View 1 (spheres, helix red, strand yellow):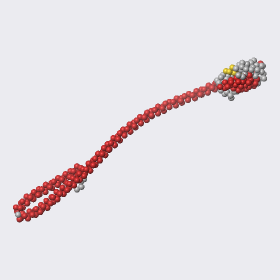
View 2 (spheres, rainbow, N blue to C red; view 1 turned 60 degrees about the vertical axis):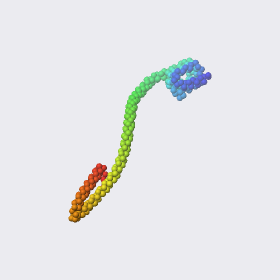
View 3 (tube, rainbow, N blue to C red; view 1 turned 30 degrees about the vertical axis):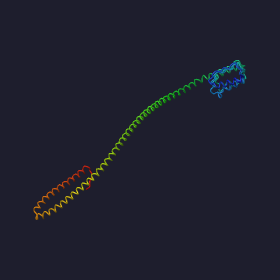
View 4 (cartoon, rainbow, N blue to C red; view 1 turned 60 degrees about the horizontal axis):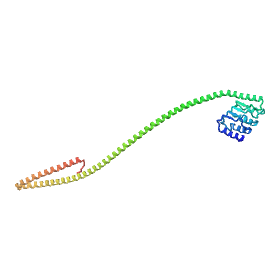
Length: 314
C-alpha cells in the first residue's frame, strides 16, 4: 500500500474505533501526504467522539506542510495529550503560533529535527504552560463535577424515594384492585345464586298459580253445576209446593162445600151428616199433613240456600 492509501485506511479506522487512545506510527514513511490525511481524521468535526490521547509520528518523514496542517487540525482537539514528531524534517520556519494553539497537549517531542535550541525552549514553555493550566483547571472542574454529581445523586435519591412511593402506591392499587375483583366475583356469584333461587321460586309459584287456576275453574264449574241443579230442584220444589197449595185450596173449597152440604143435610139427613163429619175430619187431617209436608219442603229449601250460599229467588 502507498502512504496515502495507508493513511486513508488509518483515518477510517480512527473514525470507526472511537475508543482508541494510543496510536504509535513511528518509523513509517507516511510523509506529508499521509499526515495530511491522518490530520483530517483527527478534526473534532470529522470525529467528534475521538478519544485519542497519544500520537507517535516519530521518523515518519513529516515535513513542514504536514506538521503545520496536523497542528492546525489538533488546535480544536481537547483530548490529545502527547504528540511525538521527533526525527522528522522540521526546522525553525515552523509557525510557533500553531504550537501555541495546542492548549491541550502536555508533551510535544520535536528532538531530532533541525530546530534551534530557542525554538525547543519555546515549545517546552508552551507544554509546561498547558500542564499548569490543566493542573489548575482540573480541581475546579472536579469540584464542579462533584457538585454536579452530588446534585444528580440528590435528584436520584428523591427519584428513588418517589419510585418507592409510586411502587408502594401501585402495589396498594393492585391489592385494592385484586380485592375489588374478588369482591366483584363474590357479588356476581351471589347474584347468580339469588337469580337462580328467584327463578325457581317464580317457576314454583307459576306452577302453583296454574294449579289454583285449574282448581278455580273446576270450582266454578262445580258451582255452576250446583247452581243449575239447585235451580232445577228449587223449581221442582216450587212446582210441588204450588201443586200442594192448589190441592189444599181445592180441599178447602171442597171442605167449604162439604160443610155447606153438611149443614143442609144435617137438617135433612142426620145420619148422613155424621158420616160426612167423619170424612171431614179425615180430610182436615190430610190437609194438615199436606201443610206439614209443605213446611218441611220450605225448611229444606232454606237449608239448601244456607248450605250452598246460593240466592234462589222464589
